[in-house]
Length: 292
Image 1 (cartoon, helix red, strand yellow):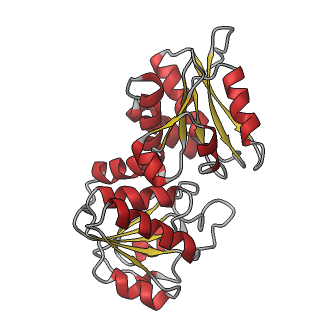
Image 2 (image 1 turned 180 degrees about the vertical axis):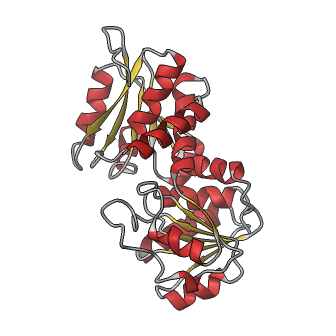
């Protein structure tokens, strides 16, 4: 980010805990620089139980909006004045916009829409197909419901928290009843069997992320098949253990960079009603990764 903060500079925030590894500031501040917008994007580490104070602080500082991340995506619902229809069904919010005059807050969820946009950009066929999703906490929740909205043929969910998995299944059955949702048992044999005729495997758990690089949702490449596309929404490191196993099995893969950029671009559009310069932002993020 260039040294351009001044008395007129507007504020966009990111509220969550922890935030030290977030790339959102680099992404949005690069976009502000490119477009000449007099705004700055800053992280605010707000621990669980302090979200109300964090939201009030944003209003006091006349912030235009904020991203909301772990562990606040569901708790923030209590502090909204309005919510988009998709976020209401998903039951979580990752983006808020604050009206400058009334200070009313509207909540949105860009995780699921960003994920679908990245699938379409990569030309990954998934509509009317079978998809296996591991993990439906956090962004996985939005991904599951958005996949159902977009017409996936069958959605198989593997999640340790069975109450959460069943709650999401019930939500999909209520709002999108034509989608078949299956909750998988917690064993690799079941996962391998379901993957045989699936087109897409998605890891939406933290396994494999920085600090957990040795962890993976599968034990090895033999669980996969070469016609499967493997999508790991982890983006740091750029190549996870799951992606390495997938390449050994002959699968095509991607990490979470594209989803991160797309969900950020959708939030950017909500705040400013203009398009984020995605090609420029992607170049900035990749160059930054290569320099480290």
